[in-house]
Length: 302
Image 1 (cartoon, one colour):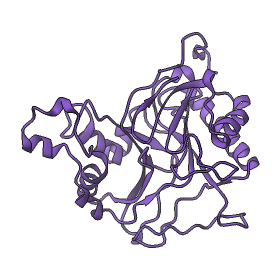
Image 2 (image 1 turned 30 degrees about the vertical axis):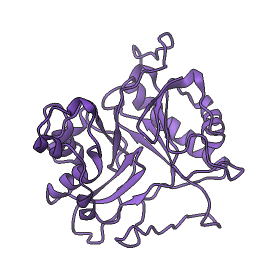
Image 3 (image 1 turned 60 degrees about the horizontal axis):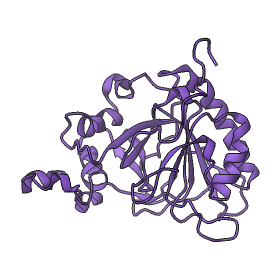
């Protein structure tokens, strides 16, 4: 680690994560960002747009339904009309992939917010709000049709904080852990996809072109660097998202299907064990566990 930036091995890890209802993982194709990701590209970026809506004082701010926006190194899908600049995003633990969010208008951002990110039902603490205010804070499925090509996520996603622009501990550890996870996942028979998700049509059909794989049914994992999620002193910080339909080696439903598991103090020597225990066997490694979230957006504790 850089001088003066030691890893905290003293304080407990359990529960050291902020609660959230949805992670919006923006696909930037970059490995690092400014300290405040909303300042990227002079403020013209999807993270800034979403923070304007869901951040402090935003139109859709709801303390009982926190939307966490992070950048990732995953590349965005190429839009059908290449002349239009577009951004892709993963929604987790909804396990949805939104391939095309055009940057020419704020309408797509509002459609994402209203169609996918707002809660379907408000917390009981909002019972005193007026009908108009309640309606504004509630999801409307009609907006989903304004975003073409949205599809279910079937790949295992490994997100590693590599935000060197925020803290050099994660900036140092992140790229090393990415290489290690890719290698160990491939050893377990995964195809590690590095290319952008390819969308074959705008009705949600995905084209799987798995390079180097003889079987189109081979399990796929994607490993990406992400921006700040808190707890840099616990680097390396890793979140493993297991898709809802994932099965174990016996063809049985994976014990952690639909969940996101947060780990801290991860070193390269731990990666093989985490892949085996959590990805393959569906078990949580307790001494690295920071917390987690399930498909019902309940925060997981041990």
